Every structure is written in C-alpha cells, then in structure tokens.
Figure 1: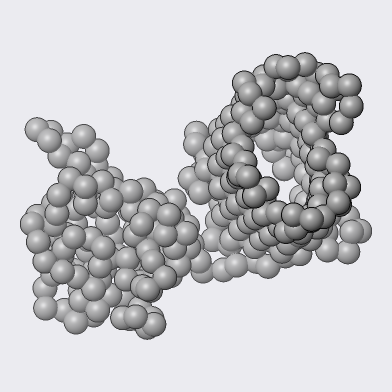
Figure 2 (figure 1 turned 90 degrees about the vertical axis):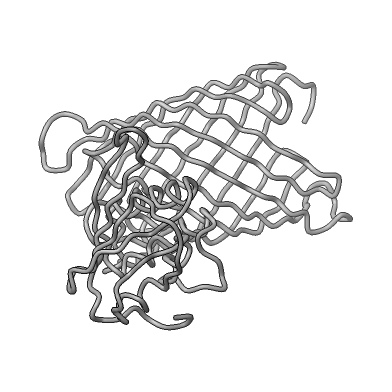
Length: 344
C-alpha cells in the first residue's frame, strides 16, 4: 500500500463505535470517504497514528486488528492484522461485508477518537487557494509588577492590498504571575468583509501564556486561549450566532547571531496555532476549525521591539465541502514595553 492510492471500488466505509461496560456508554455512527483520510492526516500525525513512513490510507493498519472476509479490495484498503474482538464495526458499502477490529481498551479509545474525527466532515474533495496580506501589531504594556495591558490590532487584505478582508482589534487586562507567565481576560471586535457584504463579530476571551527561555537566546512560548464568540448573520437576518473556540499557540524563536548589536538582533520565528470549535453549530459545526503555520525572519531592537516578515499558511475547514488554503504575506510589529521601569 505504501505510495499507492485507495481502490476506486471502495467509495466509502461506515464506522460504528461504542464503549461498552455493563451498558453502552456511547454509541455513534459515521461515514468516512476515502479521500477524507487526507484531511485527517494532521490529526492522525498528532495522535501518533500517522508517520512519515506510512501513507494516509494506511491509517487502518494501526487498528490492533481486523477480521475481514476474503475480499481483496477490503483487505488492500484496510491493511488489516488479527486480534481480539472490540465493539467497533466497519462496513464496506458495496459488498455489504461486516468485520470487527479487535484489541484492548486503549485501541477502543483510539478508534473512538478516529470516529470523532471522521464525524467532523473533513472533506478533501475541493480546496480553494487564496493569497492575502496581513499587517499586525502586538503589544504588552507592563503597568506594574503584576499588571499589564494586551493590545492586538490587525488588518488583513487581499493579495493586491486593494480590499480589506478583515479588521481586528483585541484588548485585554493581564495579570503577570512572573516575568514569563501571565493570565489575560479580554474583548475583541472583528469586522469581516466578504462576498455577502459586511458582518461583525464580538468575542470575550481568556488566555494563559508561558515562555521558556534558554541561555543560547532561543525561546519557546505556549499559549492557551478560550474564546466565546458572537458572529452576526450574513443574510440580513438580525441576531447573533454563538459559539466557543479553543486555540493552542506555539511559537519558537531561534537567535541567529550572538554577536549582533543590541539594536538589531536577527532571529528566526516558527509558530503554529490550532483552532478547535465546541458548541459552535451555528458558526461552524466542525470540531477542527483551522490551523495557522508561520515561518518568519525578524529583528529585535533593544530588547523590546520586534519587526517580522514571513509566510503564513492558513488552512480553514468551514462548513461545506470546500476547504480554504490561504497563502499569506505576514508583516508584524511586536512590542513589550515596561512603563513601570525607569527605562527600556
């Protein structure tokens, strides 16, 4: 199967899963199309189900085992092994064959996780490629030893910088647990400009941020953010669509020169942010909302101001069958200003 494609005869498979004790605790059915496995690849990789040495369609080899009929199409597609029964069944939609994967409670949890991912309706049938420019300003203003203000202003335009696609203003009150750890409570106001006209969005958000610094000048930042969202309708209907979104952000800075002057220290920035929806059926029923990956070159000025220029890949999984991939030129100014100190 390595390096091959799925058999054209297998158009879809249905998955039924449940966790059973004395009585079923959870039971659900879902259908996954072979091409959907490609869109699941990031999750499978993060879950340890996928590696660079296997193809996307070999995900089922990681099920502890499968007892299947002598159907070569099914065998080739599932790449099965053998083992003990577990309460999960997959049905080949053309032959009507049923067969049971087997394994321990750990395998059942893995299977249930796969089921949940499948039920997201992550479809790789169509991708829409777009180009854009983002201009961003991020700042932390330290007012005292324990208190500060978070500021975030962004303008996102089309590739020609002719039309604004989105504007964002985000402010928050920070409590500084230490020089490297803080908590923030904030409010955001977003304006969206699309084919259906303008519609706004309001957010309350809570955030935990922690930074680890090393002696060689490298650093890594972890950020957890929870957003309560109110998004206006786009068809002229009054009212708001409500939802909650979780975001995990990781950013690593690599110092490129130990001998550079303090006013211009070059560095490389790598960052990734994963967005997951919950209780957001009216906004986006998919659990996986989007992912943003950024690579940038930056200059640090006197320890408090950074200028960065980079490329961002934004993968969006909206409702429907068309995913969006944005290729973004990303220009940022980032500042940490300590107004409680005598000088910067």
